Image (cartoon, rainbow, N blue to C red):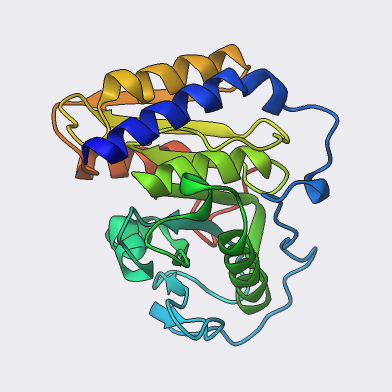
Length: 262
């Protein structure tokens, strides 16, 4: 764990020092290895939807992605979609478990991909196979359920939170909201748009200590002009129920059938 901590600390310093170069600028999303090209279609014709609960997408031979649908979803009502990324050593089911009860309550659809290796590619080197997996999964979901284009976000825990920040900032044209539970750093990539950001972190986190992570990440993001909601809580390296609930409510997305927000 000490080796991992030293690595993430060094990566955080690199990412923060590269902030100006990676800020929103002249680069197009399509030129970045972190870019995602899948987008919700412009219209949502009525269709037969899968039932509520977990559904394997059948796109990967190993470590397939999961789509989680709430009971409230109906074919005529575009839903909010949150891509949820597991922590190191996790899988798609671990990602879904972070927010499934709240997804039921608030009518959210969850897309939980799984990293190709034990953690997400840009945590250790650069964006690559995991971006392709997420893009394929998004494309399938957009073809399967009606998704509100203004209610697409990305979230994650631990390494998944770091990856959510990096990928979310690189794809601001797609993701309007980013939720990072206990991130370690921001993997650098050219940034597009200005998504809103929610960060929570335990003040007794011994895996990704708060002083070298979120307490540096959040001020840097604010200096770069991002709207960041930040919450610290008494606890360790975890996602508390209170943090998860506040994050979902922070999204401000109306449940399907209750009108549209942007």
